[in-house]
Image (cartoon, rainbow, N blue to C red):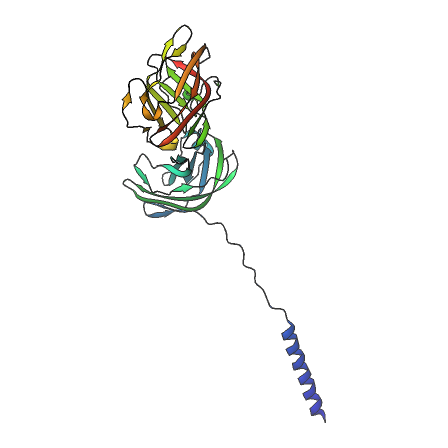
Length: 326
């Protein structure tokens, strides 16, 4: 008589167990978010781990210098351009800048890679994305894609993301900094992109003229600028008493600067003795008013007109005080 009772208890227990199994909620797993990709570096065919990275802003818009080292570094080294590297330390130092197409498109590129004075050929498309200004003490994640061939060393490759310490702005060299800022409302539009002109200087003897998006001083120093327009030839004669000019503007216009790398833009057409080149004969520069400043006497330039320089459209407007250099 006990057997049926035992069987019943067993069946009930089995049923209860089965029911609990059916009602149990399905288990779920959470996949942790993937970590940001690290930077993979290869120098001369060998992998290298970079321990630190630093970035500073250069004195022309959109340009930065980045320093990576497998040892210990500092912002002071990058700002002073003096590096205290250990015997076995590996490093990469490169410049990020912009290039301007005739269509007006600006692209960010790695423009220079420095490897102990060796010739470096940078692969097209090499770039570094800088998300914000590298303020001193800030931390920036820099996506880097760089491939290059280093003379006598072989391939250099950097791919991934590295966190760099911001070092602030690189100050211009003392011989490139004017003592006072000269008044300017002048702009130049090149390839459809309008930028302000910050500096101008004219050779009082030859009449040669430079207009720059960066500051200018008298002397041999060249402006650190994305764009420098140069005019050489015959500017209208200057009345030394009043610094007033009259007559046509005849000569050659050229364009250079960081936007064009080592290239200087210039037209290859014939030069007319009275009007200069056909592509730029409508560009005008008029001078009036002699002033004095801490750097040199100045004249006010009134800029106007449109033209083209080697396929890039050019338009000048506004006024700027130009240094009158000996």
